[in-house]
Length: 258
Image 1 (spheres, rainbow, N blue to C red):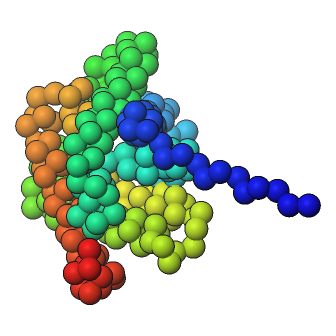
Image 2 (image 1 turned 135 degrees about the vertical axis):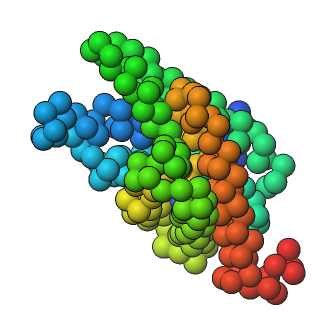
């Protein structure tokens, strides 16, 4: 006895892709900013920090949110959750340029909503908790006096280009048709964790302009004045990876054919 083949799944609608990008970016920002705000230095009143997760915990949290989001929403939208990723994938020929603007808008909406959710929860904290979080930049990215380790503008520019470029190379590699199927989100999540462990002391690790804009909105002041760095240079890193990947790994002949 034979049975008919199951029908191929329908292509997700644009509305479904938009919702998936909003939800995935919300998860990313809520997970990152929530961990950094509530858990990173929990119990640090006397300087011993017995329960806080620190830099390592924040880095792991972001890696987990991206991995989970990629598995949950990747089949619908591709799981970008990051304007630099969308632009880098388009530069590599893996994503349509015409869809980049709506993806970026969706990511910005999700990021701001994620930061807003953390802000709302923090507002119900003990006296002075929210004011302290906002005064510290609300997990915003920064350089100079706003760098966790006191690194300058040049270091922030260099780290954002390098880590975003590496991140895109990994994404392009593990999602290639020749890569083992099903493991891409794991590799992407672990890569992001590694990159954050390197970059958090330098500039609080952006890699993602939507995340940087969302936290700067709530940090305000000088954080907003510096956010341009974390919009421009992750995108530069993404473009470098996307454009070079086609030559280095897909081949000039294939590029010409497209």
